[in-house]
Image 1 (cartoon, rainbow, N blue to C red):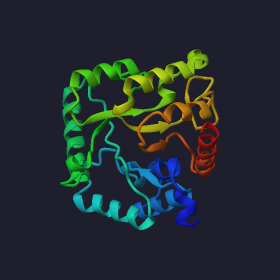
Image 2 (image 1 turned 60 degrees about the vertical axis):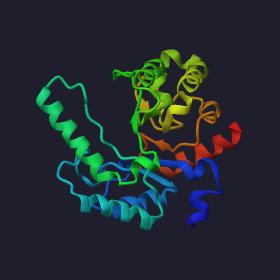
Image 3 (image 1 turned 90 degrees about the vertical axis):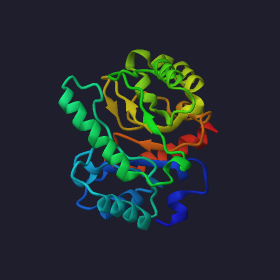
Image 4 (image 1 turned 45 degrees about the vertical axis):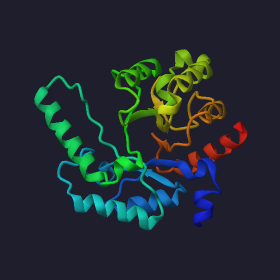
Length: 247
């Protein structure tokens, strides 16, 4: 696949990515190549893709730089890096250790120019989190203030359940209205009838309608989650088709 075919001529294709751990491999070079073969312009990095822990406590600066070089060679950009852990874990020792690991990983991953480039901490509203929905996220942003380098990673599937699926347009419209300018990234998965997460296009969400709402947001990366390697290319094609239908 050529660069033009992979990246598209503009719009969603250029900001469409996928979780790197969708393609578990031995090396970052192999992961980056698999992301590129599936047609994605972006890869959300997680050291779990190469069999390490997400917080990468045993990874040094040279290994982080090697990941960047591998993705550069493959023509795939890295818009974000996973540093997920439970910041309110009841075990204070585990909480402190993981906080230190996350801070270390952030320090390894960010360049000196990160602040000038607008690098921000992304908070993702999820039902199981303290920040569980759009209204709670808006409250958090209000309490933090406009100058704090934090934003929202918006995943429509986190805001909607099988019980509220008939109200999906209303719920997502409210989220976009409340959080719009502070959204720094979007994640894409689906809602299964069981309530579990599913791959895009295999659940209950009306994705053309979802993309029409998301078009009101800033042009931020849209990262595919909960996909299998076999479904990755199909999901990309569907999202681009739905975007055209929604426009």
